[in-house]
Amino acid sequence: MTSTTELPAAKPRIDLAEFSIATVSGLALAFTALFLCVVPLAGNITGSRDFVVFWATGQQLVHHANPYDAQAMKHIEQAAGLNTGYAVLYMRNPPWALPLALPLGFLGLRVGAFLWSLVIVGCLVASVLLFWRLSGRPANRLHWLGLSFGPALVCAMMGQSSLFALLGYVLFLYLHRTRPFLAGVSLWLCALKPHLFVPFGVVLLVWIVLSRGYKILAGAAAALVASCAIIYLVDPTAWADYAQMMRTAGLEKEYIPCLVVVLRLWLSPHSIWIQYVPPVLGVAWALSYFWKRRNAWEWEKHGNLLVLVSLLAAPYSWIYDGGLAIPALLQGAYRTRSRILLIVLAIASIFDRSGVGVRRQGDFSPVSMDGAGVVCVVSACVRYSA
Image 1 (spheres, rainbow, N blue to C red):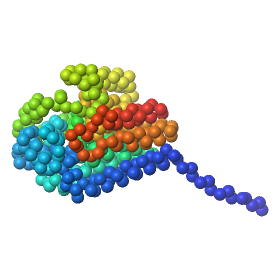
Image 2 (cartoon, helix red, strand yellow; image 1 turned 180 degrees about the vertical axis):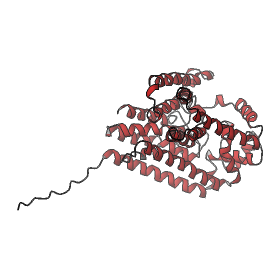
Image 3 (cartoon, helix red, strand yellow; image 1 turned 120 degrees about the horizontal axis):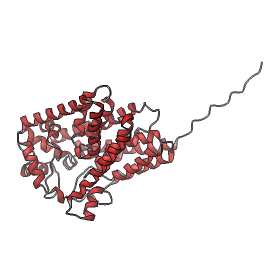
Image 4 (cartoon, helix red, strand yellow; image 1 turned 60 degrees about the vertical axis):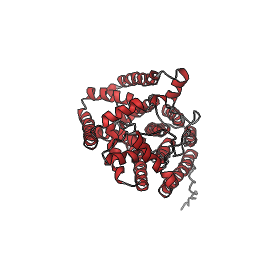
């Protein structure tokens, strides 16, 4: 009887790319979790984040007061600890977004900050997991890139609302085939920041007409009508007050650290129209991109690049808005075979955590203005390397 020699089992090779991603992501998530746990215990940190603007808006709404009243908002914000010099901060989202802040009016500052942070982190986790499912549940750790993406963590630490828009987009991808009405309802979350979805929105409308997907349009319209009705009951003059605020707040003079605004300031500081050139060019590109693929259009496949271009072509954006690039980033990471690009992407994400979660006058500089843009470009390179 012939005996066979059993060879020792080969040791699994360490994937350097996944190890780099796990290391960077783990450290980033640990730091963010520590920060969010400390926030409710430290009143000065709680009151110095952008979250205070949403909380102050909620306080005004529950008392049926004007959420765009400069004196009232300034008093609430400064009493909470938000130090912006002589400036007053408002919710610049359209008034149909005010129901998002309404529940905060029933909560104290620290409790509200804690629950708000939980909801924002929940939006990030849900978005990444849903997209992971849409991608076929790949058996790797690349989705950690989304969970630890710099702009998304900055959004969570500052208490901003961009991750609500991210969840709305991913829900649309997840539901548009099986639950078109609910997919349309989910677009209400994208409408919280409509300026970040201009090319995407135009293509979506054209696609709805061509595919006769009017249930999606009905769902979106129903959500917008419902939110506007709620706000009308709480504050009947919200739209008029919002229009007055936008005319008098001097937003055109504000320095917003993004590529489009810096381009305007460099070419002609007083020519506001320059900021609207990139969205127009983005719409032209998006329509061309869609039309060539209209007979085989798949939102799961083509929509992520569309959102990425919409983000980069937006008339203005902040570093935390870069979280909308997560679907494009993950799509590229799943498709590329280049481990070097994945390592570069993990390292680049480190430099995109330059936000500090606290708004102070003069925090942002041209150097740190577009860290989100840097990572978006890298993710686009990964996308096209497949």
